[in-house]
Amino acid sequence: MIDLAKLTTEQRNPNSMNLDQMTPLEIAETMNSEDMKVIEAIKEVLPQISKAIELATNSLKNGGRIIYLGAGTSGRLGVLDAAECPPTFGVSPDLVVGLIAGGEGAFIKAVEGAEDSTTLCAEELKGINLDKKDIVIGLAASGRTPYVVHGLKYANSIGCETVAIACTRNSEIGKEAKLQIEPVTGPEVLTGSTRLKAGTAQKLILNMISTGSMVGIGKVYQNLMVDVQQTNEKLKVRAQNITMASTGCSREEAEKKLAEAKGEVKTAIIMILLNLDYQAAKERLQESEGKIRTAIEK
Image 1 (cartoon, rainbow, N blue to C red):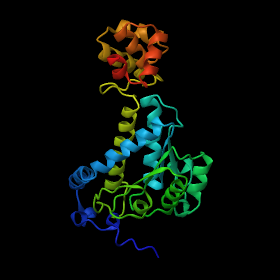
Image 2 (image 1 turned 120 degrees about the horizontal axis):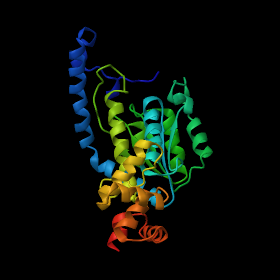
Image 3 (image 1 turned 60 degrees about the vertical axis):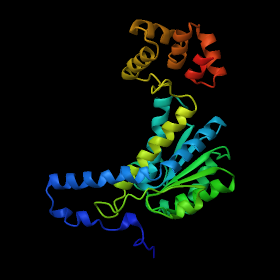
């Protein structure tokens, strides 16, 4: 039998022992108070998060990918973060990949027993041609999910950088990974429901890793998402706004240059700031490894 008693995420929270007797306002106040502890827990592991950003950036620069592994809520959070990267940063859907125990269908409906498999994750990693240039990040609030443990083992066996994100100290996935990120968020308001504080902590950490690594490979100028993809009307306006904010140009000029730049925000910005045509701007960006600031300083 699995001994869950020692796991912080499975213990009972003394502040919510009478949860079933609370008013709606008391429930909201209690949960809000507990959620504040998430920020403090993450503050304790910022050096490890910084290292993960560095490792992920290096993987991307060297032609590798970021691969998230998880089951249940943890798996869904990895898939969610991966899915947000293409529209936000203009990267290929294959650059940041989320694997969830039970496959894509498990994002909507849990697949019983998938997280307990000791072979499934390795098979899926082989299926996406895992390479030693990739970084593999395993997520498990409890830190013990077999699917993740054995996925990290396989990643280590072929020489990948590996990171574990758990919400309990000295976790099993942490022992398997080369880098451990273990914010202790404490017992949940609803005992064992790690979609709450533990899930929030994992989401915040993934935000930092994906955003930080995309900054590292030139997908951001100042604090603007300069590789945003114009896939709808809102994003077309955002692309214009980003171009205007970066250059001080009018909306009309932004719209004109974006058209000349084939919708590429970063290229349009360089065209305006350095008074270059499309091809020259593309070459300047290539010489600068896609970084606008470097291109300008040159």
